Length: 102
Ligand SMILES: [Zn+2]
Image (cartoon, rainbow, N blue to C red; front, side):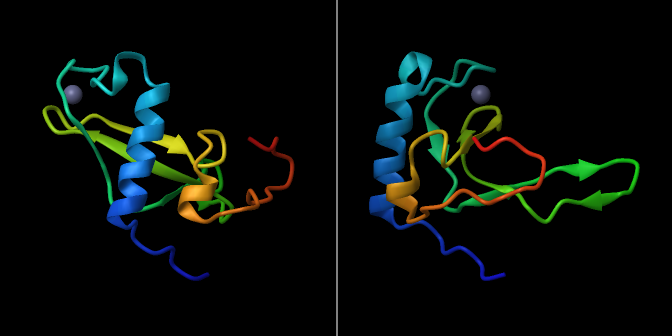
């Protein structure tokens, strides 16, 4: 699997603009009510961990993360559901057997 590249400053700005338009309070941390929230300069794959088999499902969902600069609270936003595919350059959601598509 190839590693996804880091986000450019332009991508970061566009993602922040789009997410802030969707968030209640425009991007104030829901945990401590501090601000600002920073966008981690990366795309993450959030996947499931199976406790009984102690295995990690290789099919994850690409997400971006906002991190509160005051308390460290971190939030992940699914790239497909948040409508960020055009910005990060992804087109097709990953396929996971037995799972609903986002
Ligand atoms: Zn916070």
